[in-house]
Length: 136
Image (tube, rainbow, N blue to C red):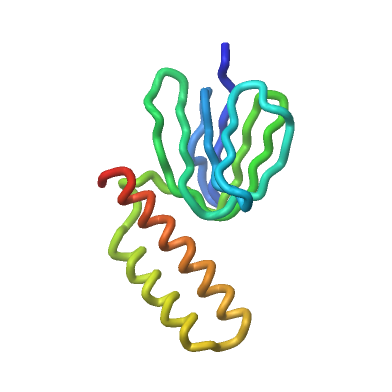
């Protein structure tokens, strides 16, 4: 059978566990797809759209924040700060965070505040993209 074990863990909860046929994860180098019997690897995950297909189901999407993914012996483990299904994303909150981050970037405070605002902006934009791409 062309499946693998997929586990996605958030910082404080289990997001998804089960047998999967495909997972596509956002990485620093772009989207990376994993199928059964993929070679063992470790990836850095960036905020963006996660796509996955569990056995016998349609392709689904979710938002993931930064984290890491390990592929080892037909077992895929994704550890992320946060993961959300499209229907869980609060669009008003995401837009507010995006606006706040844009304002913080323009204020030219310390480098640390700039990078934090930049990370918040990227996360907010990607959350909104996942929400809109799902048609919700």
